[in-house]
Image (cartoon, rainbow, N blue to C red; front, side):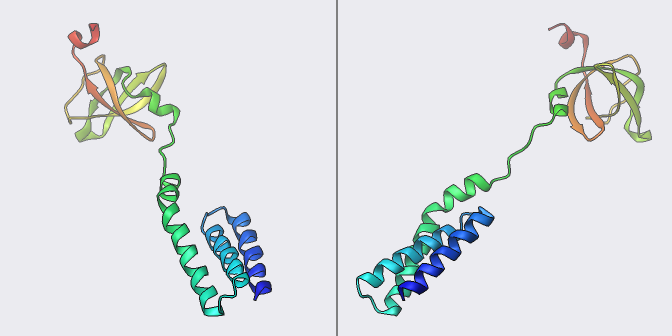
Length: 147
């Protein structure tokens, strides 16, 4: 049975090297423990139990690590840097008519009002969200602008 466990161990290590999913590595270590149990003269059923229990325990213990590393992380884009910046309205923003444009850092953007209010041309707004090629903006009064 040593040959069986050795082949299983090598196959599972190769699978892990090809996938990097941290699943078959625990099975490979379980196969290694089962191979060691053969040296202790465990019956085949006992070896299978060692394989199953050790693999399951290793997987259970490492599950928090796997979840932490697998959690999708938000990838920041340069457009995220525009949130909080001031822009100038160059075409009245009217959500009802689906129109409105602002100039932000010399670039014209399509814009919508965050609170569905009309924002006249020439107003200064602050960017609250970037959604693709459209900015969601909020009108700011002159007191906020001077602060």
